[in-house]
Amino acid sequence: KTIDKNNVIKIVIFLSIICASVFHPVIILLTLILLTLFLSMVFYYHIPPKIIKIIIIDIMENYFRGNINYFYIHS
Image (cartoon, rainbow, N blue to C red; front, side, top):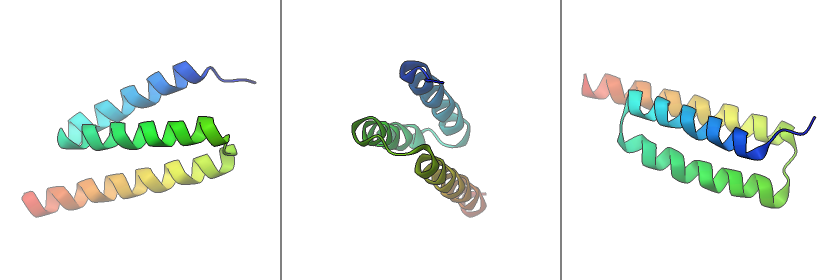
């Protein structure tokens, strides 16, 4: 199967904006910057899906851990 790149980009950006706005508005900018870097890397160098999955999981874990810490500090 070939996945339509445009649809994937739209979905990922949409989800990241939702996550960011729920947690903290400033993170929207960071997420978008990271996404553009990440997507350009993927499409320029054709990184294998396994590595992409590892990177995504790693980013998500750090992302949510960071937000949880943020709420503990500021609550």
